[in-house]
Length: 390
Image 1: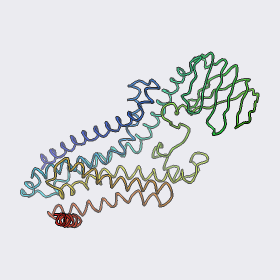
Image 2 (image 1 turned 180 degrees about the horizontal axis):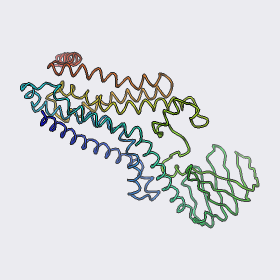
Image 3 (image 1 turned 90 degrees about the vertical axis):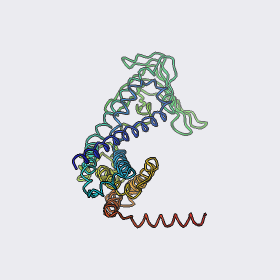
Image 4 (image 1 turned 135 degrees about the vertical axis):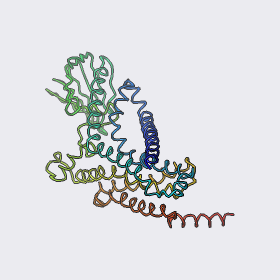
């Protein structure tokens, strides 16, 4: 039995490594294709892009760990079933339950690893991602403000300066045109301006001194003099419309989510009811997704038994479809929890509870060499349809 468990565990690890690598690679390629124009226009190096995606890896892993675990277990037992290894083992007196230690240990390790990501890794990755993104945007902003060149990298804003000292952050004969408000155009002109960076909020203030404001609203034009006028820029807008100032529940460590749930006064100032609902939903999401590794892994074993003889490519499609059902229920529960339609505790646990029940029933039927009634009903209906078509 030790040899058997080692063989099963080794195959699970190989398939898991392949699955995680493929899914992460697909996500990376997809994101790079979405942002290819942005990266080319901002002249960001390939290593910087990889660094940014590395810090997003915990976020991606939290989502793909359950499906990777499920695929590994499903394909392993489907292959054993297709090659009649399971039949030979049963003929030798080895029941399904005696084969469980290897997949249970594997799924438990995946669950613990996902819990580590959920509790610490996700918040660390998002913090480092924001810091790295800010540094990229901050460094880029120095080069983008070139003397005598119109800068239109911020949507609705056009900057110009006749002289630029990026080291000191000084501008001479500067102006900005603001068209962010519909139906109105504001032009600010000043002989002197300065760039003030705010690393704590990833923002930059461009402060104009002793200039004029030309405000056009339809056919009306107003001219105002000022001593100091500031235009605040969110550097996240340079690299994909990220907001650094907004506090999001999904970026918080689990300990902070617990603190806010226990004491709502610890929430950020002005937090709305929707924010607290998002905190509750994110809290249960961090608990239920890691457990999904164990639950979906155990769920995959009887499913592989039921569909024994199925080719692996079809098995892959089938398992992806079953996970899609799980993830669709999970996504709907997140949306309903954040909107307040249902308490998050019920919605977030519902997919796991349903799949646990199916896994336990399926395990019992698979060990007894019986087929689930729902599969028999589906087969019966399919035969009827084929008969009518024939």
